[in-house]
Image 1: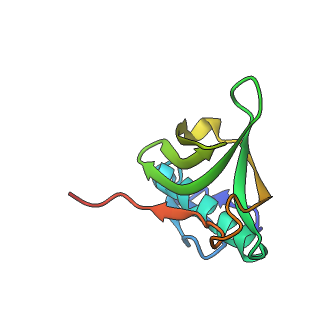
Image 2: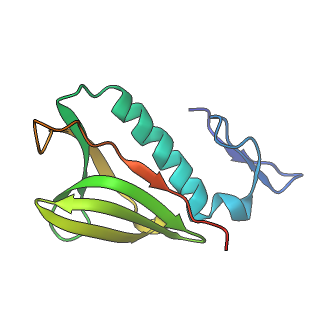
Length: 128
């Protein structure tokens, strides 16, 4: 990844990975930008998974590590990301401030060998 920088004469952040070519600093600080970066990384990770594995996320911000099988991710600007899925067999939703994002992507065996592997869906807010 090319190191991004803030130009001295303009107030635009330049990213180089087909995400966005030039963003205002405000936009860069929004959850929608983080959402897009995370979506790209997850899609890259999922491309390498075979049909016997699905993606899980290890979270380490609860005083212990928790593995969550993520089925969807959404966001709410300016600073909230939401992860939907399962912890064990329990339905779970994690609401996370952008400044607290730290997780590890894991390849895990499918929960149900008879079903296709789950892949993460991405939920974009609708304009009302």
